Length: 198
Ligand SMILES: CC(C)(COP(=O)(O)OP(=O)(O)OC[C@H]1O[C@@H](n2cnc3c(N)ncnc32)[C@H](O)[C@@H]1OP(=O)(O)O)[C@@H](O)C(=O)NCCC(=O)NCCS
Image 1: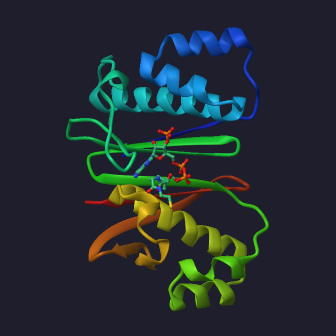
Image 2: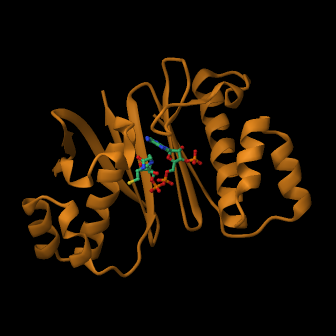
């Protein structure tokens, strides 16, 4: 697996934005320009740069992969090649993972949350683990990002209820399909989950 991340903390000058946009296929350029907030526009551009760099590294060539990316009916971008990838962005951070396996990534910035509002998204066992954890907030976010990563690997996204993803140790199950899952902190308050099906 190739995994890349980049921070998105500072606003670029117009000149820098334009020069980075120039390197992208028209469709992606148009998508980026539709975003009103600079953070979203830059995240869109950075995610494609990470994807292009990851695919070139994976294949060891300089092909233009971005021009070949398509989007399925659930909004999942894909390539018609034996390669899978997933993108996620949150406040200040963008991640991209490329692998032979079916893969999903999710990154979240850890904030204060009222856990009780989210109970419906967890199984009874998962909810107990959050409640009994020494660090409930981190346990909550670990489970949350894992569920989103699994739904993105699956490809149906949030059209599938989060509580259909059942997490146990280093794996998760969705509709009888098993996914390996890992989480890692990318900064003090950014947590990323990767789910893959080998
Ligand atoms: C995919 C989804 C889970 C993203 O969640 P999110 O936490 O808001 O956003 P993230 O930053 O983690 O991920 C966004 C990226 O996921 C990818 N993505 C979009 N739809 C996807 C899907 N169905 N499966 C996998 N990846 C998907 C895209 O690359 C997107 O980035 P881009 O817009 O720059 O291309 C969510 O938007 C979704 O489920 N979309 C599908 C549409 C849908 O069913 N909506 C019902 C809402 S109830």
